Structures are given as C-alpha cells and as structure tokens.
Length: 280
Image 1 (cartoon, rainbow, N blue to C red):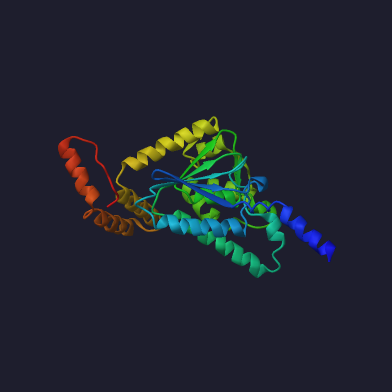
Image 2: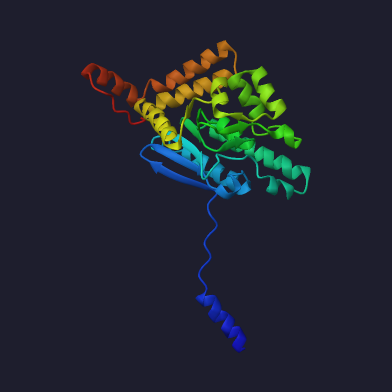
C-alpha cells in the first residue's frame, strides 16, 4: 500500500509532459496569413497529421477572404519539405492505405490551389517530392540561393501523386517537366528560376522575406475581389479552350461590377488619391 502511495506522490511531483508540437503553425499579420510547416526534425516531411492540419487550415482561410488577402507558406528549420513521410508510408499495411493517402494529399493541394487568395511559397533548404508539389500548388514560389528542388518519386518506384505531373508541365512545358520527373533530377534554385519554376531567388532568408513582403504589399494595394476573380479566371482558363476561357473571364468580370471597391476606385481616380479597398 505504501509503495502505491509513493508512486502517486512521484507522479504528482513529476512535471507535466510537453504537448506534441503542432505539425502546422498559423500566424496573421495584418491581411497576410503565414502558414509554417512545423516538423523541422523530420525536414517537414508530410504525414497524415500535417495533411489534416493543413487541410483544415486551408478550409478556414478560404472563408475569410475579407480579412486574409495573401497567404505565405514556409517551412520551419532547414527545409521547406522533404516530401512524404516515408517512415509513415512503411506502416501502411495495404495498397488501399496508400491510395487513400495519395487521394488526401491531392485533395489538400487542390484546395490550396483553389484558394481565392494569392499564395506564395517561401523555399529554404530543400523541396522534394510532395514538398515541391505543395509549392507548385501555390501561385508564386521564391527560394534562397542554393536550395535544392526536385520531383524525385521515380527513384522510389512511384510517380508524383500530388499533382506534380500536371502542374509542372503547365508551368515550364512538357519536355522540361519530363526531363526533371523521369530522371528524378534535383536542381538548384538558380536552375529552377531559369526554367520559370521560381518567381525569384534571394541570397539569404532576410532578402527572401523582403522580396515576398514586396510582392505581398503590391497584392494588398489591389482590390481584393478583383484579385480573386482574376486568379480564378486565369486558373480556370488554363484548363479550357480560348473561347471557353473568354466566357470564364466575362463571368469573373461580372462579379466585380456591383462591388463597392469598383466605385471606390472611380471616386479615388476622380479625387486624385489612392483608393482604399475593403473587399466589398
């Protein structure tokens, strides 16, 4: 009995265990939201918990278009993301488990791509496999000089399953995309910029953040609803013929006509002042 009581006292004296770190962190500064992949010890490898957290966060962001107007995604530590968590994949007991995992990452990255708000990926360290596919689902990608990138899945006996075989060719052309994907080649940020995969390359993280902040500031000066509709028209038009794309553009333009921001722009022009857009 005394030994049982001693164990109880020891448990009372023992410090509480720290909670497991969140796999995805969120911070909002003004109208800019910052998503941080937060598994630095695993090079931000994407596991189920990270996907679930990222998917839930993306859903919330999509409902807050007046308050959140630009989204930046980065990785904690020395990597953006090394891709899928291969240790977790080893625990998947059946092909169906793997299919469900691929379906989930495809769904989350598609939701990211379809966010109304412009999205910017800030790449540091490395971005391989699903990590690069995550970046490809963003509207803009910036990287620190020397960062390594690649869709390396064929070297693991699989292919990109998070949209890489579709988004990369649309971004840099089919021949160049095939060369990178079929060889599992890893390239530097400088090479990626030359291919058109990146919007910019910076010498260090401070300059990278400065470049992203400058782009975000430009995006925030524009009318939010107009930005969202222009993004929608571009994305949907890419998957359509020119005639259909024109119809998509017309429908998107119609959304902007009754907005207060359109009237504000006209009044600001007449008064020779900068417009103040509210996303209405």
